[in-house]
Length: 338
Image (cartoon, rainbow, N blue to C red):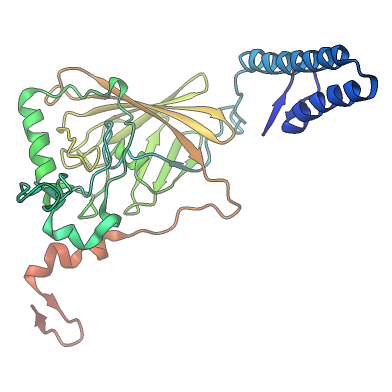
């Protein structure tokens, strides 16, 4: 165990060696001189020194100066780099226990004498995902929603439950549609920020999705889209992005949380250290929710020497799922194969 403390300009490392040798010193002195009182005093003094160092470290930590992000040529915080969320929000943005699958069926009732019937009372994976086994399970998560409550209107709460029951056919992630905002940020794939003065481009690995944040006067969106229309501004060191003009085709997660075309998202990206950003997002949709609500999470810099966003063009992976019932035409022979 090691604790590095800094109660002076020079850091002091307190390790298990420190504790052991303070008390060994007291024992040696006691054996050599027969003076147990001196040994006890040395031990007490040593413990007091360690306690003082520990207390000083805690006090000093609370006084650390706020992080000052590196600057771009125009003096703004430099957000360039490859980033990734590390959480379970893409499964469910609210707190949730582990469960056997996203698509489940009720467990059959127990039968027979106690101890002889089926022991597991939990729900079972739906038939289409049984073969995935543990790979299809859902890990537990603390959630990223402020207060862990999403204020659905009554009709929307019922719709959300329907989405859960029909996840396999309704979640747009399954058919490789653009993930939308903010979901693209916390999917389990990296994304890259390419920062300019008037425009900031974000390139996401999933589905090759991209979005442009307009830092200048960009006018209005020509149409509603999956990724919306992003206008940005700086508030001190925080990049604030106002996103509108969504369609209603994206979800917030795999748990069926959804929105309408009236969705309005405000994102805040704040550098907190050389290695992470704090990401906060406010969600407003008067057609679906009774009030605005918030999510927040850290985003971590991928700082491997070869960190980059790779291709994950999943459209070709789902052609059979989406169009297989229509048959596939062999381009060489023109034959339609069912």
